[in-house]
Image (cartoon, rainbow, N blue to C red; front, side, top):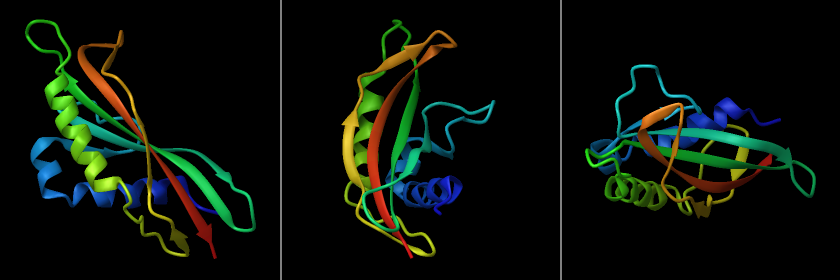
Length: 138
């Protein structure tokens, strides 16, 4: 059976090795950022891992969340959110995730949410990008 941590690591490896993205933000593996993380940043989290139709086929969603600080005028930093999200989509769309013992189909680009904010983090905004992952377990 596939392992969520292995999936997170494989997708992290794809994003973390992109020099352009590294110049835009820091990427963290898992749904939570370190306490002292500085924005702009992004997190990677594999979710809803489940068997698909057929023997040995597995599917999951890859959720990439981009975080930026609120602008001085109190508005979302839409420019940075879009620049970073666009680069993430460019790196992950149709990319093949490499994991031992599996053959992954190219990542399927899903939706990208609108800029949003959470009461728990009033000084920042975030935007979510979703990708689909289908792979075959040998």
